[in-house]
Image 1 (cartoon, rainbow, N blue to C red):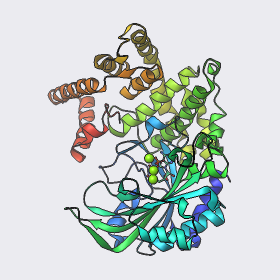
Image 2 (tube, helix red, strand yellow; image 1 turned 180 degrees about the horizontal axis):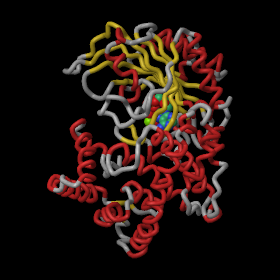
Image 3 (cartoon, rainbow, N blue to C red; image 1 turned 180 degrees about the vertical axis):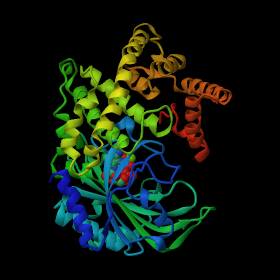
Image 4 (cartoon, rainbow, N blue to C red; image 1 turned 135 degrees about the horizontal axis):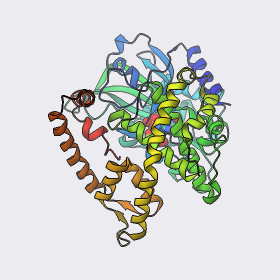
Length: 465
Ligand code: ATP
Ligand code: MG
Ligand code: MG
Ligand code: MG
């Protein structure tokens, strides 16, 4: 089943069961400065989870564009190295605002899995919150799962809440697929691919931590499209599924022979992932910059340029791959076609700017690996800072290059130097606020600053989490 068929099956199924289909909201959250990117299907519906009586429909289904590349949910470092993480991905979801309960949620999910996806119980396992006997009982006695296949986990894994403070929250139940990867035994978590999270919002957590039952319990579910595609297309890696392969197969890598096959695959997967993320972000008007969302985009594009360079591609790599992205996803997301020209020109400009400095920075790093301290094998904070400040190397990029060479980076020191330089810049902006272009920049920075006092530490250049 192709990715596009899965999207359609999911939406049709939940529409058939009374849900209203909504289009994907933007990745850049509307009126929500606490969040960098929409990172789950429930994000655009957050206000209705807070006030379910105001929801325009009691049952909603959608395929939501998500990005997990910054802030609390950040899978950027994983991309290319795990079979299941992307920065940009699509989350299929069904949501209820007082229309159905835990039992109906599990039954509906199970029927979709069994009847539409046709996945056998023998290849699945589910988790529930350790104290959630109700969910355990439904999976065991009503759905008929073997008790060996129902795992009780603690609140760290199976209790969902909106941040740490006050708000709706509740237990969840997740569904996993047996990858049968021979490297892992059945007891090894790595063997199991999580693909669907069912959240039962039953409580309201008060300011002092008390859990009170909600008057109107809600349901939020999220299933990763790319993971389901890997299961149905019998691949062990999301990047081997149809839409990714359309992109990956179009990569011409002159230097690939110089790399082992694992590295070749990793760099190609990084390119495919980062192409999708950059295109969808630019389509919404995010531009590369040194703060906030723009900085995440910059990091993504620069990592891609470096992956391309390792594969022997010296020209603007992502823009060259753009036609394959259109071929893979243009019909599901017409914005990729409508906004082709601005997307390509922003990508190209960022790639070219970085290509100019990449060689100088790489030479500096190679010198450090050759002549630096071989005892500690650590790139010093001041070298990492110079790479960032003079050559535009995001610190996480320096970390990746260091890691590839068996080195690490003194992140505490670089963090200190970045904070210091930011303080300096802030005071110099204040004193030179007469220049128009600088004033524009200050405005942008200050707006972000005021919207979210934590923006500096959470979103800025040195965010290396
Ligand atoms: P994982 O444990 O694999 O990192 P998660 O528990 O962080 O996943 P959830 O927050 O429960 O994921 O999100 C719901 C679903 O969205 C997941 O079950 C998965 O199918 C999908 N998903 C989450 N993160 C990613 C990602 N980075 N790339 C692709 N799909 C994802
Ligand atoms: Mg995760
Ligand atoms: Mg998980
Ligand atoms: Mg999960």
